[in-house]
Each structure stands twice: as C-alpha cells, then as structure tokens.
Length: 407
Image (cartoon, rainbow, N blue to C red; front, side):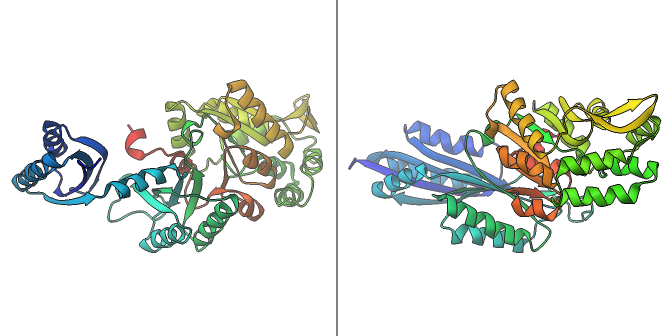
C-alpha cells in the first residue's frame, strides 16, 4: 500500500455539457480507480467531487492534466491528498444506519432548515446529501397553493431511545408552525412501499359523510356531537357509530347520491392518485364511513380496494341499522394486515393515512403511518404528519421528486 496515493478532486464553476466526460477521461487514460464520485447543480453552477486511487508515479501527472483541463474550461479545481488510514476509517463508518428526513411546507425558510440541521448536529448525525423534491420555486408564489419539499439523507448510529429523541426534537421544530416532517430509516422497505391505505372522511374528503346525511335528516347537531367525541377518542367507535346510524332512520336513499355528487375533495387528491397509479402503487380506502361513498371515490379516482360500512335500506329508506361488522380502528388494522397478505408484501411496505383516533391502530401498524390534518390526539401519537399542504405531500414522503413524476 506504500505506493498507493488517494486524491480528492473538487471542481467548481459554471455547468457546461461534457464537463464530467472531460475530467473522467483523464482518469481513465492513467487507469486511475474512482473510489467515490458525486455531482450537484444549483442554478447554473456545478460542484463535482471525485475521489480516486492511483500510484504515486502517476498521480502527479493526473493532477497536472486535470489542472490544465480545468483552466481550459474556465473551472476552479482543488486537490486534497487523503491518508490511507483516514480513507479506511471513512469506509468503516459506512456501516452506520442511514435515515431520511423530509421537510414539507408551503415554503421552507432558512430558519427552519437551520433548526432541523441543528437537531441533526446535536444528535451526532452527519448529513450526506440534501436535495429539493419539489420543482424550482418562482420568486413570487401563491401562499395558498405553493409546495416545498426538501430531503436530507443522514447517517449515524441511533438507539431506539435516541431515535425517539430526534423525533421529539423535530416535532418541536414543526410545532413552531408552517413545517411538516417525516423521519424514516432509509432501508429496503422504505424504497419498496407497495400499498397505501386511506381513511376517507376528513382525509380524502373534507367532510364526514354521516354528518352530511344527518343534516338532511334534521339531526345534524346530535350526530356531530357524537362524531366529534368519537374522533377525539372519548367514546367507543362502534357504540358511537350505532347511535349515529340510528338517528338516520327514514332518510330517503336518493339523498346519498346527491351528497356523493357534491363531495368536497381534499387538496391534492387527484394529483396524488394519478401519480400513485402511474408508478404502480395499490391503494385502498379503509373507512369507518359508508361503502356507498367509498365506491363513488373508487369509480372516480381508481382506488383498488374499498372497505367501509353498509347501511341497511328497505323500500328506498334507511332503516337506522347497518349490515355486517363495523369498520372501527381494530378492523382497519386487521384489513391492512389482510391486504398485505393478499398482495404478498411485508407490513413495512404499507402506508396508512388518516386523521382520527380510530385510524391510530393502522397508522401504528403500517411501515409508514401519516396523520393528515389530524386531531390533536393523533398528531401527538403519529410518527409522521401532513398539516401544511395537501394530500400530494404524501408523494414526497415516499421519496418521489417532481422532476421524475410530472409529465
């Protein structure tokens, strides 16, 4: 190893076509071995880093030719000799775990990035890469529709308690407003999500269908009070569901069609479903609401599965009863598990999205559980949340990038 020399090359300047070819061809000419390479572009500026190994009798000629080429192309270049022991120690550190922190917001400020970077630093983690997932931002943006997503790839060893501490510190940053985050281990399962299960009411749509039915039946206030209590986790879901459905007795079946045609879809639903289908995800609605409305969404947006509650109807009227087993929190988790078995995937490859207390079992069971504009109890428990932008924010938690999914 005494004849070996390791050189780090850093090239900076204006991005031009063929730059990488020009420099790597010089390395190839001298049979240099590239140990690591990375390139980043911001606006029209290039940063190219190459770590190569050669013999001492060749490395000087390589650096001379690289220097001349950089001067010819109008680029800046810097060389750093890396001791072999330092390189070996660096290689040994690659066994540390990788994590992904994704930041979401209408806009993401320098203060928010600095606060998240400080959390990473204080926990002894190292940032390997930072990339923007959303498209290039205009100087003037609509604060109501803008989206910004940034992904940090970080490395380090964390115990279970330390992971919880990082999560808590990120939650504190998020709690100051305007920022959502996801903190995930960057393992095989994170890169192989296959199934996404959604709650329906107040998640995919901006209403509770039972409240809409109750308003038409003239019992809106009574049902809303029971609904709110159930979503806060104050009363058993099945009991509350039975009591609410009983209040709908006598309502005409045609009311359901009218409500379905006028459902308020939550922001980003159409874009999210278009892209999820395009890249091959299976999607499911697991709802404590009603099958009628779930089937309507399935037909319109292409969900693969729908599991919800069936209302009993006789002579065109709701009887105030339901058919079969209630889809409550326990049943949602059970259905998630069964769908994973049917699709032949691990639970770690599943994603669950919901807003209420009855969604917590499936959020905790899935490999990635996301609280969407959720109730306080759910926000306090969920590992990831989206509160600042629409449903298509989920795409960035999956690691998808605008430049690769639009078109």
